[in-house]
Length: 243
View 1 (cartoon, rainbow, N blue to C red):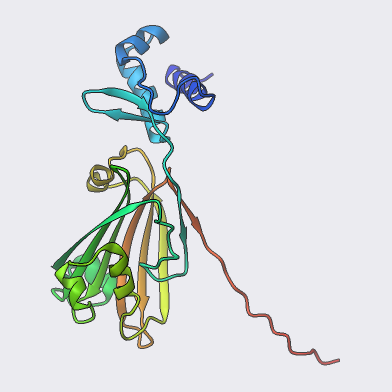
View 2 (cartoon, rainbow, N blue to C red; view 1 turned 30 degrees about the horizontal axis):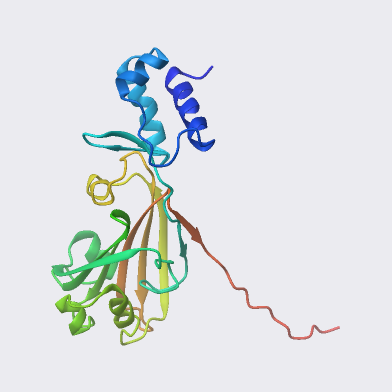
């Protein structure tokens, strides 16, 4: 038998998916809903938290709970360099870029296979759908490889993509690690998502023919608005068989 929390979440979910509660509509107050379902306010809030984690409801501080409007889903295409105009379809989004210089330490030093303290360009790319944050990418390039215009932080996102795809020496290998996890407090705050909403976390290393890592990227894509596709191409030996 479902708990009261789950029963309330099921009822509200059904009202949302059938259109009785419409996107953008404000839900009744928590006190009203708690009275309607004859439960305590904490139980009602737990039920709403389930729907918030599923991306069906969002809470706006000081205003209440609202049925969330559907967000554009982007598809991450694995096996390509980042950033790449074909890696993610960001056309419906606006992307802000902020570039700073940092030092390779800890995880970054290991990821880029560089001595601790080596200078890096950190390119923070935050995608927006309207006014709402949508996706987050941190791209790291050794300063001796980063184009001067990228280091100055004077380029729009499309130009940054173009400059980084022209890195010299050209990349030869892409390695990706994919995980599904809960967001860090910083990620949840930046993306304005529930700390209970799982994210697709992608760590990419791009190396040249000598094995040097020329670029690394840390991508965070909320699970309610991202898909990932990986395609493997097999080489078929068409040589005739001996009889």
